[in-house]
Length: 250
Length: 277
Ligand SMILES: Nc1ncnc2c1ncn2[C@@H]1O[C@H](COP(=O)(O)OP(=O)(O)OP(=O)(O)O)[C@@H](O)[C@H]1O
Ligand SMILES: [Mg+2]
Image 1 (cartoon, helix red, strand yellow):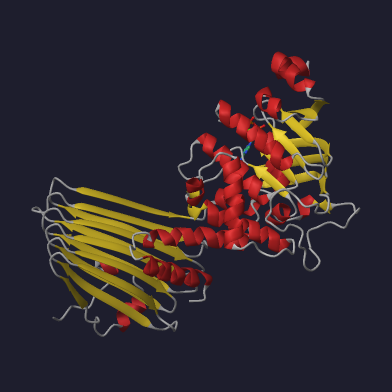
Image 2: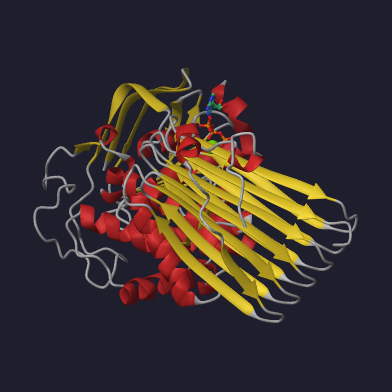
């Protein structure tokens, strides 16, 4: 399958840096994941590009068969331009669970873009995206959900939150819903903010130095993306990696 | 223990404290009463160093007594290692509280019971308090408490305050009722074992039984020769359990009247307006 090269006119590429798009010779092949009927497929992945000039685009195409589940958890951190691009098609009664964290500092650009295709009745999805941007980093989170006419009783939740730690950082967060069925639940929330000053002061009053208090709140913020990891060991791994990324020691 | 001298402070450029003076000795319990908006909470925030509360005049000196083997703080309090940076020299003049960062004030022994305790989603009480206690101990040059020892201490303090240990595992104050939050403040105070506690309306929102439990808790944790309490309250009820040595009226940013426990009864009868006249 050949794919036309994206431009900034494509909604899903709207925030990508011009120089990255100009330098693209081809989009990397998408990794195909087929989850067979009734099965559960976990994905745990940390994307960390080492150098500031590197471009790392990870594409997934996931097909979830009837009554199957895909539970995918990602961490994007470090380096130059990173993009996680997930295209999911859900069959009847299927479930897709996503927890994705982007942590950016310096001039890093991080993009988390998902497209969910609810094409059959009774499928459910839950996506949690968390972005933490420092310095002049840019984080973009776009969750697109298409619900087809026949996909009644779809239940799709999308929660996108961004934490701006410096005024010079940028976070773009956008849910995009296209719903053609009438009996559906699509809860989506989108919030960008700073650390809660009152919580910071409370923690300091109890004895935590400012830096420790900030870390504690940031950790709690990103941990929300990994709350749905059923396997306690993996949950610890992923939160541990995210904490290291927050400290800049990933 | 605490010397407040002619303290002036502004919030958003608005003068709130206007020459407040107050002196508290170790072993004493002081109650502050006063009309809404008088500046009582502001005093607590200024003492604990909340950003945005700007001191424009006066001084605050804090001179906690050296460690005397307090109530909680772990099985081995007082195992000081190398020169604790935040303990004032014995018999010295104490420290300039306003020079310290909020966490340094906490480590020096200052605890603020918040009028509106803050929710921290995603951080359990246990994790929060263990990190806080060990940060304080580190600042004082004391060894950290192990996970096991901390849990023992936390369980004991939660039990004493009638709080279910399960609640301590939940995120800090998230979904707690008003009364549960106040109870949680007291559990935290028991665990952190401060020298000086400023308790801002800890009695508001408590049911009748909880009021007794909290009152007894304040006595148990804080009524000691080396400790002191500044109790901000609107009601005599709490003072039935925690007998103050002194009662002050804070109105329009300063202490306008001071007396013994009888002053609280008089206030309850007459109100602030009569008194000001
Ligand atoms: N951010 C702010 N900007 C402007 N004014 C403020 C701000 N915060 C507090 N104030 C004002 O400072 C004054 C003192 O408030 P404070 O909370 O100290 O009163 P209080 O004595 O504790 O009252 P209460 O009994 O109702 O708790 C009030 O008039 C309040 O409106
Ligand atoms: Mg108040």
